[in-house]
Amino acid sequence: TQLLEQSPQFLSIQEGENLTVYCNSSSVFSSLQWYRQEPGEGPVLLVTVVTGGEVKKLKRLTFQFGDARKDSSLHITAAQPGDTGLYLCAGAVDNNNDMRFGAGTRLTVKP
Amino acid sequence: NAGVTQTPKFRILKIGQSMTLQCTQDMNHNYMYWYRQDPGMGLKLIYYSVGAGITDKGEVPNGYNVSRSTTEDFPLRLELAAPSQTSVYFCATGPGVGWYGGNIGELFFGEGSRLTVL
Image (tube, rainbow over all chains, first blue to last red; front, side, top):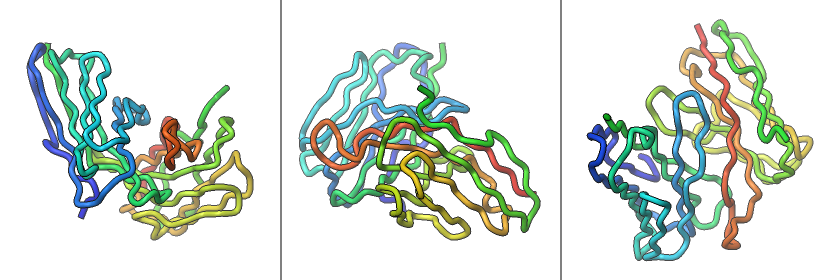
């Protein structure tokens, strides 16, 4: 069983559409991170959310941390082909030092 | 400033062979991690280290060993390679403390090492 469950696993949309991907767990996290990975490269951090209910915006990307700090969502407005990639959420439970990743959402944005 | 450097980038092994994946960082981070990523999947934690001389198992440690004799280096050893170990291996480092004061902080990844066991 994955500590962090991400959905959907795959998402293919047209340029200009909006989308939301989810990261859920039964565990409480002190923080959650979202990474984006392109083919042949390592993941790159997009954002860290820390406070329950927190909302962070990064241009067209909006990240939300659940009130109970067990889940998070990523919303992309007016998706562009450059948003194509694998989106991964990650977190460490109970302030442990092992950072675990979800299986990811593979997003394809068609021009 | 190279960041996180992994070698080799590609390797083909025969079943039963052994090898070491090298990871070196010049970011002066205490925390280092090894992950594997199977095709189309997320990352699974193999081993991690919070400082020189300290290592801990992650989710999938079987078939692997690590050591951390210096802050800079965190090699991953595969003994008796098996086809199930065919994967892309990523090394990552982190400062251990985020901007918010909590644990871990951002992870910085190498470019990966693609290993095939035949």
